[in-house]
Length: 476
Image (cartoon, rainbow, N blue to C red; front, side, top):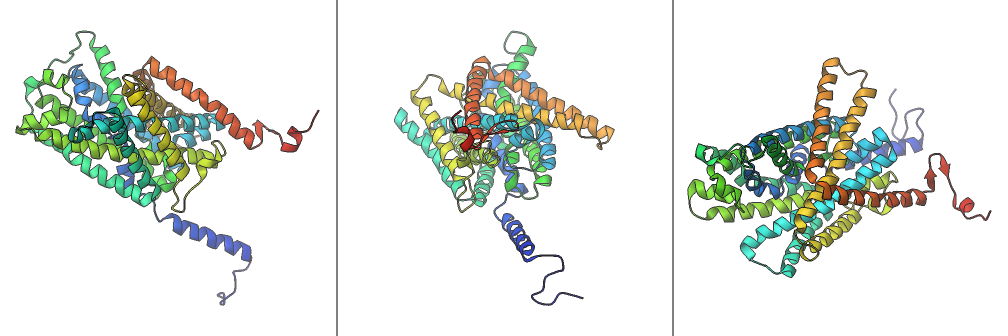
């Protein structure tokens, strides 16, 4: 017999019904303002394709066409890493991505160190993007004084911060729009440029005069920088619709899109711009367009493309600079202030603090040191490697200890993919260089007192040891 109006099913209390209604409301509410598959792919693509791609072909040309082989090897490593993140995200669709995976596999402190390392990467790396963005904006503005360039850099940083503060829907929409706008000219060069290739433009296989394996390794180290951001959707897993399904799909699709664009555009530019001219070019995409069609329209088109690309990348990384520490703060491993959210459900403290720190790094670039951009970029690359390496090891740990029900064929395939991803992380470390590794490691060590302070504030002083305020303040 059905329930009459006002009656409850037997065995269910009013309190239980209230909990169920609250949970149902939370589920319904949580579906609003989440990122679907297209927005998730756009977040990855927007974060990976920043401003570095617009200068990369010229840097690679100095090593010869061996750079094309290096780009292919790096792309394979990035795809393997995306597949690993897809597996991890499907199994553990928790916010924080690499932080959550390291914590689940190895415990609290490795989890904290991954969160700290990624947090450093996000706000330091945004400064590098902003510096390149200023260079392209000055194609039109010609603001050459340090003060004017700082003003432009701050504009590039705080406009995306304001977009992030308005909510997840606007972040996703902004990511989709900027991704589409920046890809139109890049795809144009990558596809149309193939029809203008001349074999004589490619130059020698190894242009360094030394061992070709050394040239391959160095060119690969340069190419490694352009794939930072492959982990983007894992960081914001709680803001992804159907994360167990879409994290893996978005990660792989996003990296495949970038890899195809990188490979095609590199081949097209190598084949349309003579080798000597390309090696000294400051705008290789613009030179490629000019060589294809003549005239001087290429520079303006590519500068505009780079401006859109940079602002889109900063938008995505600004989101990540707040999401990672928020996930750690909820677990009590980061200061609790990072867990504060606005009425729109965004971690506003992390956004504001991260953008403020990025602003200081940008000022440092213009006033603090010579060749500051390269130092900023390499340090950010090193701190990126730590979460990549731990994520690969977390997947390896699960495969060799817990994957008892996985078939032999799938287990072997997953082990092979994970091994490639771990080796990829090693290669990225090598590419960062000794100075960046040294400075980056010192910055990682700074996080240890933060971890101690956070744990002490929670009354946690060690495994199984809790000191209450009353007992700690009692005289002996």
